[in-house]
Length: 360
Image (cartoon, rainbow, N blue to C red; front, top):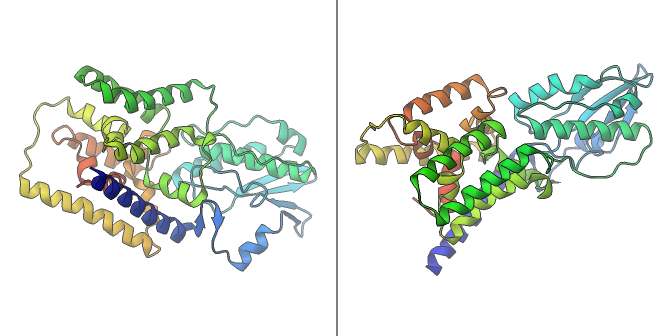
């Protein structure tokens, strides 16, 4: 038993190092610390504001809001001020999910246009549903930049992902805790169905709470504020710590909203395809081979974009890409006759979990 646990610890450390290599290769960062910065970037970082040729005051929040983290990390902005009013705000290069952040750029950034600095600071800006982390980071970053333009000292307090007093936050935490604890003591088909439905409705469609490759890489690259990310921290504990105490695949079986949705849909059809052992073996090889290929591509510095197409984002369908939605529908239909097909034969995040748990 001790040998197996030490094997699991070694597997977990190995997976962390694998993900660390991906994060450094993509962002040249480790827990928010830049490891390699070009000369042009250094010059930009050292200049908080400058005046353009037309008298436009341009403020960069790259350093002013470096502790403000969205879903993918820091979200630097350029704020353009002329005659004491906000002319426009544009986002600089960041690691936010493109489809989600595009809605933030179009729906959040223009809300300050035409306002004086005082009006902009007082304005209550609405975020984008389904892109809360990115929206909050942008709002806080703009606030930092505007306060700097007024000579007001800012305090480094990361934007919160959700208020601890909100109904959504409380319900999400309760569903995660129930899924983490109750199955250890209760084995009931009725309870399992209830938990699966709660996972789909609350964790999936309502709050969009799940673990993905993008989330893991972003946290390793940019660091993690535990208080501002209570929900992801709970999910990470269930996924990576629970297996060390004998609860392998607990996250996948009892918490993951996508796995839960596949199982719920699958219960609508009693008949299931019988997969012969040799085909099952081939599908398992395909899953592992796909994971290895994706990792090799990222280590080579290419194809990081695939992380934006994991099917978990289909729950936030307002911002999900058409390709993700189509694939999600295909796998849900397939789950009617094959038990959890995406989880068993494709899911790169699930494959990472299995490797970290030293599970076949």
